[in-house]
Length: 374
Image (cartoon, rainbow, N blue to C red):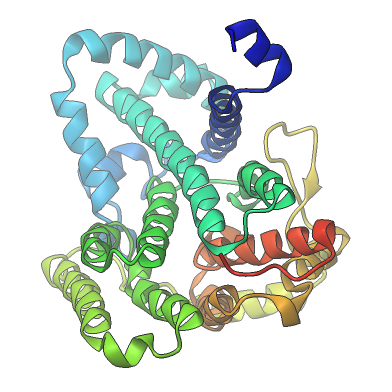
């Protein structure tokens, strides 16, 4: 069959996968643009500006998140000039658009290059996360034609919805790596690559302390697939916990004299906020300030999210149900105790499992029949 016949008679897999990959890249770039637009403290903030971040002088608990900050800082000193010069020029133009020409001029070339590296890495990690979401979905759900369409397109919806989780002001350069590391860990768990999970956990705990909970989710996923797994594989669970606990303790010991506090408590602020009407009518502007959309807690969309996530509950596979329940039990209290008001990005531990539960509901909606595990 010649090329013309292939094009007109049947869509080649290569063309389909290339277009799908391109759509993932567009979706990821749109989300990162939204993130960059909201990173309003990048220049002048006394604690969280980029120079404080790259210099490691921002306060605890943010100072505990050393991985991405250290990598970006190191790269700003090591990228060859012939690469750095045009990159700095484009980065300064981007800063002028997102923060204004006045603020862009306040940043020296090294900081502007750091901004370029941070934003580019955020795109790479988010793009890779979308690919991982597709791969994880394929490992869990059966491969019907409807399932393939849903599993292929759902990561794009995930990227679009991720934009409403970003804060209205400020941004954190470790967030996208956290999502990527969590999804890569989940993928390795599903593939049974236990030794490699230890490697990704070592990087994840250096990035953000939430990685200390990853082994719990890994155990819940494995138990959801095989209820006898835990009894015969306790050594792997112990090894995973050892990695994250050692990393957790080591970072805190090294930075024990660093300014700041170990945790920020916001319980009473959050209590007043969530018992007011503010979160239930709140709006945000994911990309353009003149086009507000409901925040996730807005009653106009909250009921939709709940129905999609918890729909067809009795038929959801255990490998999705148990990690989702575990994530809710862990993440919601953390969110109320330590996070600032409606800082939805801090519900990131639930995002992968909310995604998988939502994909199941969509498959059930289109198939109108139970979805079997792969």
